[in-house]
Length: 177
Length: 297
Image (cartoon, each protein chain N blue to C red):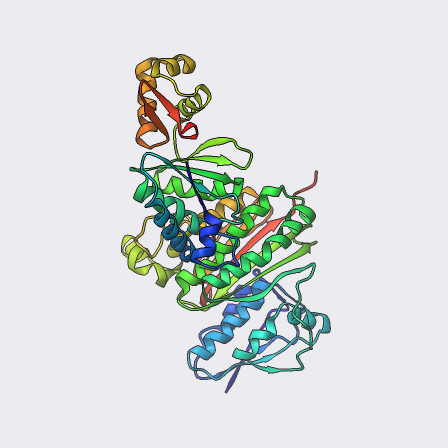
């Protein structure tokens, strides 16, 4: 995995004195810094965007950094947001809702969750992939107590949104990459 | 010729319309803002006073006169909030301004601070977070998560000036005990500017949708309820929604006044009306956020 530390980028692109990701102007500059680093990351790898050292995240910045990054690169790349606080999640969720996007996030205690306007069944399927580890659709269907076809539909949505990855004969969580 | 604009004795969001009415639409006459009898002023009122002074001067009028409060405590409080740091630019001040240093204290969390651009917003958010955390979770008894969203709500309110006013503005944050009005302690964020206001800011992108109904009230509704923006970027216009969500969660109040209208998200403890139209016109936009202490059983 390639980890991109947002505080480092904030210091490099905006000011060394800041620890908060606030204002659209800042968000735009930081996104530019992230995109520069993404150029060196293979599309099959997971780009980890690290919020761990970030203080406040406002909605404008969340929109520039997470929203626009997913809109512009989300169909060709895997993203994982790391070190997000509850307040970060609130700002990011609002942005994802507006754009109809979703992303995998890991909080500061190492717990993973899906952020974005997804149905409960899709979230359950994601949790099953997380808990089971790399697994075939039939295994996941058994765990979810659903038919294989219905499970595949949910997994297809997760795949399409680049929230899980497909490997020979099965599905795996981004966290396992 | 001089026209007297009386500043309400208790000058806050509740008496603001009275002040706006007295301010009216300045003409050729010189204005005299009479604050000598003021007994109490909230940051919302003080920012409104600055906006009135700025607008008068920027519209080509003579610098208005301001008679300052005679009450020593009130006057010193105005000094501690930083009001006089800026008032001198827009008013000819009558009365002796006390030599009081602008201080952050148990009540003044953030003195009146100008907001001109992105750097100012960073400065404001950076300064306030530690103090806000102590107040919100300590004195107001809110969960720790309340402090995390506070910076977001403050930042988005300030950015509203940077992005939409077309001029600079001010922000102030204060905490006090509302004994009579609520019986609880509150944190108040006041933000104001003398800019173009919501109706003009949104006119190009939203005005056509509303046709004849377009006005200050519909502009405020479009911004706060629909998340409309003057920018065509679909990611824009989420800031006020974020503030609204934050304040809803903590039983807070949000009120925005622009032009002749005021819109509010009203919690159960307040008796304001959700939308007021046909008010006395006032320049720019004024935003008020109130976060109350947790209600004890």
